[in-house]
Length: 260
Image (cartoon, rainbow, N blue to C red; front, side):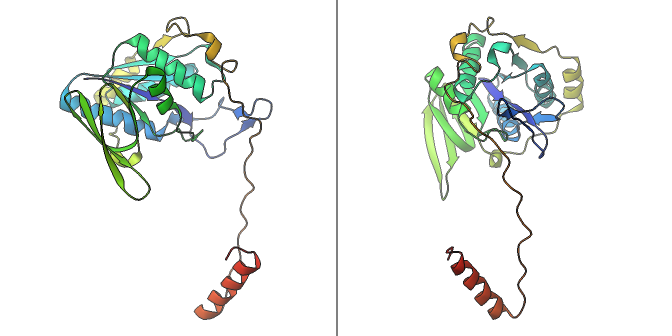
């Protein structure tokens, strides 16, 4: 079976800086990693390939530096990788991003399954995976903790708040995965050598035949009007005395603040 995995390169830092003019993340000079949830998606694709055969193709949209993230997936065992990169994609929101990735997937060929991490740790929207499914008009299952493929169908166990749900969908389908689904494998020595020599294929807006009226900042229907870091939390207050006394004091303080 042929599987496409969409990944994202995200900042590897807790000290994220914001451009005050554009309200976007400043990525220049900031170390980057593969979005952790996307690593689980790559791992799941590799496990399905090992069981059913086929090919794993990894795709990302981003600036030229995103090639490093793709090389990591090659080291893990991905067969092919593609960087979708063009100035026309700059400033894309989740709508424009999912359109661009879906367009690239259609251009690259037919896939039995498309996997994504449930969300990116820099945006936390969880919208791109489902958006890809909508653009491609295929079934989608989110928050997958287990995926089994049987013929032309996938049986997926998805994580909900209190219970897990078992669903079955026809292929092709799009599935987003959570971290509990697996433990990503470390790159092998052979994989690292292959990644070092790999030439990343870069596709532009023209290459994938994207409609540039719905890509990038101009094609994004949403705008970030303001973004800021929340104030640091204080050190709190220590209570003293016996257990009963501390409980009474705590309850009184909560009542004073109308929390309890």
